[in-house]
Structure formats: C-alpha cells, structure tokens
Amino acid sequence: MNYFNQESERIQFRKLTMNDVDTWTEFFQNNDRLALLGIPDISKDKTEIATEWISMQLEKYEKHGLGHLALIEKSSNEFLGMAGIHPRIVLEKEVFEIAYSLKPKYWGKGFASEAAQQLKKFGLETKISDSFVSIIHKENSDSIKVAQRNEMEIINELNYLGMDVFVFGNKK
Image (tube, rainbow, N blue to C red):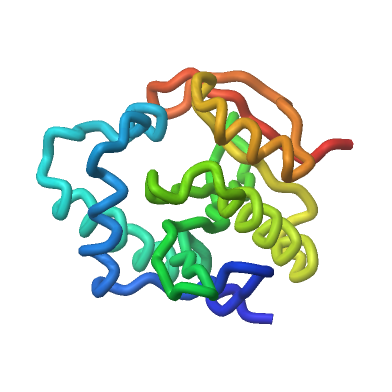
C-alpha cells in the first residue's frame, strides 16, 4: 500500500503539487472558520497562504513521508480539499494526527468523514501507529462530528498553538 495513492468509495487521494495552488486558494475565500484552524493572518493574500500551505506539505512529504494529500472526487475529478496523517508533539509525546480541511462548498457531504476513516484504516493497516488523534478547536462542531464518526472520543483538552482544543483519540 502506498500512502500517496489511496482511495475510498468516492475519493482518490494523491500527492499535492504546486499546480494545486489555484484551486486550494478557494479554501481561504468566504470561509468563516479559518480562525478555528489556527491560521494566524487571514488578511494576507489568499494565493500566498495557499502556496505556503502546499509548500509546507511538500516539505512534510520529504521529512516524514506523510502530510496532507489532495482529495479528488472520483465522479467529477473535482479537488475537494486535503486530508492527511501528520506527526505531532502533544504534551511532550509524539502522536499521529488525522487532519482534514475541505473547501466550503463540499462541507456537509460526508467527504471529511470518508477521508478521515480511510486515513485511519490505512494508518492502522500499515502500522504507522496503533492509535491516532485529531486536534480540533472546541468551537469546530463539524470537525468534532467527523472525529466522532471516526470512532474517536475526547481524550484531552489543552491549549495548542494558541487555541483551546479537544484532542480526540481512538476509543478504548
């Protein structure tokens, strides 16, 4: 199995490229939830933010062999957003986070849940880890529902990157 080439029922996962900047820029436009993601300066040029975000993922690919992947809807070939597994340090312990961000027009259609479940399944099958977390702003009710659908529950509450968050983890 290849991390960079997965699929679920409706989604094809692939590596991001700098060619994705234009479509990813849409994520930062008319999105009232950016503050819930810890994006520090939303007044910056949206294309610049998208470029930095994708560049960071490309660096993660090189450093960790993990990071956000492009989510492509199989039926339409549309770029839905991103999801991936990320190594993090939380409370001085290395954990693997399942994270997801979809363009607003694809919210509420089950794509985030489908992507998160696929990543958890892949991570367990390939033994990336035997447990995963999702770090979610306490006010991000939609992402909380995605974590719950991914059979996770709140295992901690903390301040992470200046935000009050829940840390969701595998149910015991």
